[in-house]
Amino acid sequence: MKTIEESVSAAMDVREVELLPFLPYILQDFWEIGSEPETIIAFIEQYSSDYKRLKVLDLGCGKGAVSVKVAKKFGCLCHGIDAVPAFIDYAIDKSKEFKVSVLCNFEAGDIREKVRHLKDFDIVILGSIGQVFGDYSETLAAISPCLSDQGLIIIEDAYVDDNSSFIHPQLLKKQVMHDQIASAGMEIIAEIVEQVDENLIESFDLQQANIDKRCNELMAQHPEMAGVFQRYAERQKEEYNNLSENMICVAMVLKRKAAVVQSH
Image 1: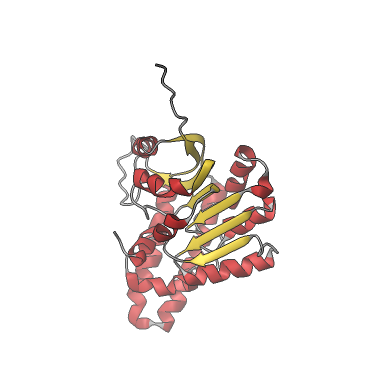
Image 2: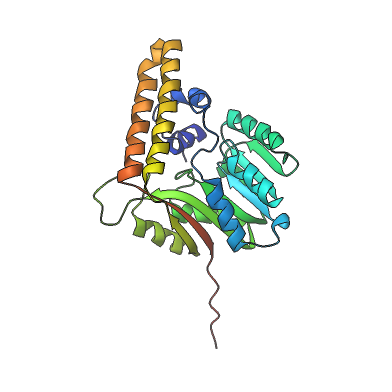
């Protein structure tokens, strides 16, 4: 099993571990990291009911944007876990700012270990965290015990089109992803593909500008690590280009397949 540092590095597209302590600084201009709270809120609104009774588990919650906004919208309990303590501190502050601190519980830790002791959640969210648990079969096997009987899993991720020649070390082809989900005894009941338009590209450009700014500041502060920060900024630019041209971002709602009753 990868170390938690290696898993965080893969999820955050960090290839040099010495960069990890600087991630909170580099990403200080971001609250929403990887997930779209509005998409997840829309899914919950459509596929759940009795909202205030919901228990939501946000794995790899980052700075807590999803949990805080879900708690604010529905008045439900949200439990967020992330491996970066500085992100958790930020999430706690945001929950206070939005007046949902009594509904939100945030903790720093290794989600691979934490899920072994969690259960009865109505919704489990995996927001662009990559293959922390392994492939989709392994991931769903690991988190299914956290679900209530009728629980749902909401995933935001990206895949590569089946007919594309593009290869990404962290992404699967669409059919492979769907096959792994099915092999885990789950089915997709809703799927939204993000459309690449001028607004999205403009958002990517703004995000890249913020990353460039913070990496330049760190290069001035730590000249001995200038190459590390420069390479990270360049990789992020390449990643945004791939998001625009080669990757397909998707949000999905999964549930357990209904058991087949055999007649005798």
